[in-house]
Image (cartoon, rainbow, N blue to C red; front, side, top):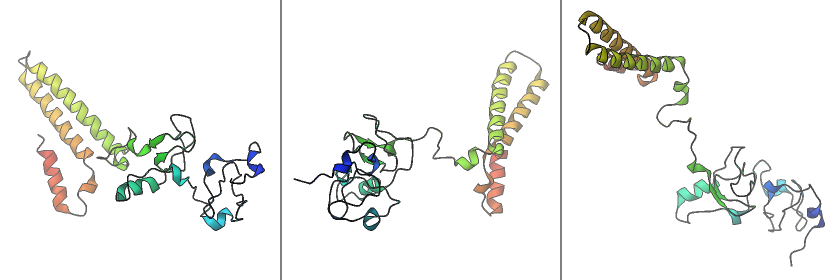
Length: 205
């Protein structure tokens, strides 16, 4: 029978995030304060592993197989979010792996499947927050709304000069919006690509 240290039954002395066996002898360290020397072999946490890396009991890690390198990399990747908890028992899973099993209730979790709605894989956030990009989007929306309204207006009026002027303004606003939406970083250091981007916006007319 594995000996049990009476200190682990002291109230408030344990840290659930350190529920892991001793890396040296495998002694169960659950319930012991953080940084406690192993009562079985006497190895301290600083001697066994990096104190800045929080360990997770390997029995609760889930791998897709020995031949699946991607699965192993997903299990070993730390999850940095401080707001992740187990959906079953509410256990704090921050600091652990992004894919694994809850050490408290054993429920499997996979935080890599969750994706923030505000994040975009097509447009970098550094561009989406700029005033230029937002102004370009507003111009395109106004131009499209004006184009739709003028199309309906042209069906019930014989005033062609007003209709043609309105359509010209709407198309010019659309071209300007496209120019503002497309970032200058697409050109790089090439003047040719800058001309191509300008021509593409001009052809919107």
